[in-house]
Length: 378
Image (cartoon, rainbow, N blue to C red):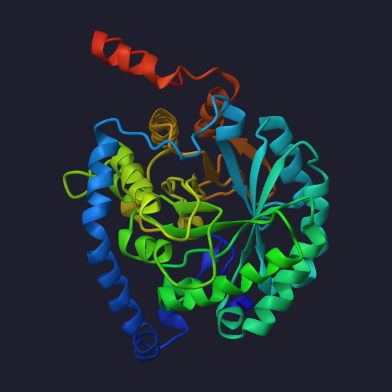
C-alpha cells in the first residue's frame, strides 16, 4: 500500500477502482466467488438449524462464553495515524480500557519500533496485533512470510494473538476472493512451529456478509482460527436493533455467525467482534463512509450503548472492540488541526459501561417480563 493508495484521513485504502481494472478483479475472483456461494448453499441448512436453536435458548457446551467482567469484554481498536503513540497510550490509561487491538501496516515496516514502544508503554493492557496487508503482500507470499515473522518476533511473547486479514471481503483491502485470502492466511499457520501458543483471529469479514464468512469457516486450507473474528458493522441499518431482511437485528446476526462457527471444521468455538463504530455527521474527508450512514454524536453514544448491551446479553460474544479511540470521523475522542482533543458523548458512555457492573442477562429478561426499563448495562 503506497502513500497514494492509503487515505490517512479515514484510515482505510482508497476505492479499488483507482488502482485495479474491472477485468483484473473479475479474472481473479470469479471462480473463488462461485465456490463461496456453493459452500454457503451446502452449509445453509445446518446454519439455519443452529441459528433457530440459538434463538430458542440453546447454548452449546463447548463454547467460550464472555466473562462477567466488563474490562475483559470491552476493547478498543487503535491505529497510530490520527495521533502519536504516547498520547494514544495516555488516553487509553485515562479511559481505563485493558483490551487493545492494534493495527500495524505492513507497508510501513520502518515504524515497527514506534509500535513496539507503544505496546511497551501499556504493560497492564492485553494486546491483539493486526498486521494489515496490501496487494503486494497478498501476491508475494515470501514477502508476507518474511515481514510477518519479523513482526511476531518483535512483539513475542508480549503479544500472542494476531488478527490475520483486514477487510478480506473488500477488494480495496487487496483481496479479490476468499481463496486468495485463505492461501495468504495459511502462511501464518507456519508460525506455530516456532511460536508455541500463538493465536490467530479471523477471518474478520466486514459487515454482515455470511457468504465469505461461511467460506472462511469451511475450507481445506491449512489455517485454523483460534478465535473466530468478525467486524460486525450494522451502521447501514442505524440502530443495532433495527432489522435487515426482516430477521437480522444485531442479536440474530450474532446467532448467525455463531451458527457458522458451530458448523466449521477450521475454528475454535469462540467469537470476537473485532471492529465496530458509527461514522459521524459533518466530518468531511475524515468520514469513512457515505452521508447516509452518518449519525450525530449523541445518537452514536446511544447506539454504542445498545450494541454493547445486546452483545453482552447474548453471552456468546467474548469480546467487542470499538474502532477507534482518537479520530475525527468516528473516534470516541475528536482531534482538531491543533491536536487538541475533545471527548465525545460516546467516550463517556463507553467509560460508564466499562466502570459499572453489568446486570446478568437473566435479570434483564426478568426486567423485560415485568416491564422494567432497567437495561443490562446502565
